Amino acid sequence: MSDATRDIVGWREWVGLPMLGIRAIKAKIDTGARTSVLHAFRIRPYFEAGAPHVEIHLHPRQRDSSRVVVGHARLVDRRYVTDSGGHRDRRYVIETTLELGLARWPIELTLTDRDTLLFRMLLGRTALHNRLIVDPAHSFRLGGKQRLPRLRKTSAE
Image 1 (cartoon, rainbow, N blue to C red):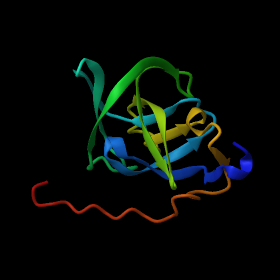
Image 2: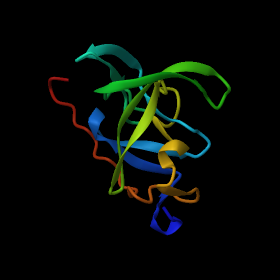
Image 3: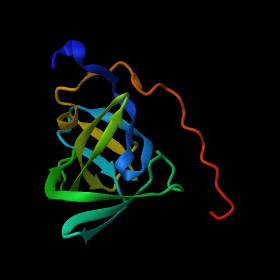
Image 4: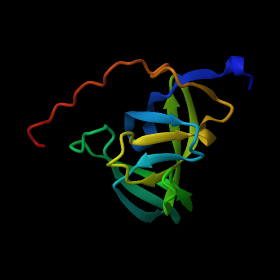
């Protein structure tokens, strides 16, 4: 794919993960990371129809642990990943669909607890390969700078 046909994204973008029930999550576009990663504070492996799956619990919004999304995905691997601080840990790997702008494509995500970090998701260079060009001087080039609506708590919560 030529550069002329690739979308230009900012250093952070709103993305969707519809198979996990996430309409919008702010992701840092991280060309320094090979692998994409998603915040999950509870991961429960299980088998369905003989195939390994995981149930994950996550907080999709930065600095907000009141909202919890529970998602399910097929487990594709467990891999050792070295983070930017040089710490190595073994992570679950899932494949899911990424929505960015008008495009959708499958990506792999490793799962780890990112509660203390600013971004709940990093989109690494493997997911970007031959699809996007990153403009580090801008943010939200595809998703706009719109704020997501505040979620109202129901009386049952």
